Amino acid sequence: MIKTILLLVLALNFLYAESLGIHQKLGQSVPLDLKFIDGNSKEVTLGELMDGKPTLLTLNYFKCAGICTPQLNDMAKMLSRVHLAENTDYKVITVDFAEDETPALARKKRKNILHSMTRSYVKDAWHFVIGSSQVLADSVGFEYKKVVNAHGEVGYIHAALLVVLSPKGKITRYLEGIEQLPADITMALTEAKNETVRPSIAKNSPYCFTETPQADEYMSIGGKVWAVFSLLVLAGFLMYLLKLSKKRKKEK
Image (cartoon, rainbow, N blue to C red; front, side, top):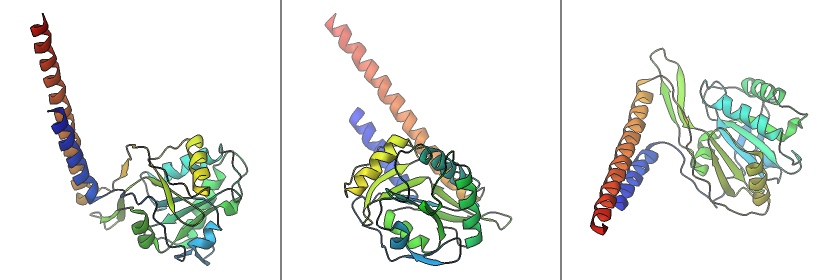
């Protein structure tokens, strides 16, 4: 019975994940010839941004009022404590997936994030760029949804994700969620340097929801999934206790 419950839970989570979220593509490679625009309105390729270094990649949008800013702020705090040489041992790239955001906004966001760091950080080690986001998102399995609220304001439903790339552009690890540990990042970058692919640690990833009917629908789906999950776990636990009680009575 417990096995059946677990299978049902996995099926429900699978159905929910298929609609929106992160579909890992470990071992696959991202196109290094993808073109982006940096904060100075200069066109650069992904390969040029990576410069042959292991790379931490995030996909965000700069006007995000949800999880993007907390994620980037946590990265700034975490990278301030990583004992690796930025721009030498690794690079960081933040790609904006919003359709209407500009190089000026990318430049401003980069300035604010770097300013929040607790130590001197090489500016050229962390790039904030726009463009080619959909192709890149598809290549790393990052699913997001554009929504428009009643006031005509555009937002996106998306998860928090950090992708680790090898110097050749191979996806070696996924780190989900907002908070990351310096030790985990150091290990992930070291493995990426050696082209070593490692499975990701399962972790709840928060979602950013814009206040729209579509977002409410996704929240409703997620709520139903977790409600069913909780009920199934509780039912399984009660059945286990009942079975254990009967077994002990027979033994007595």
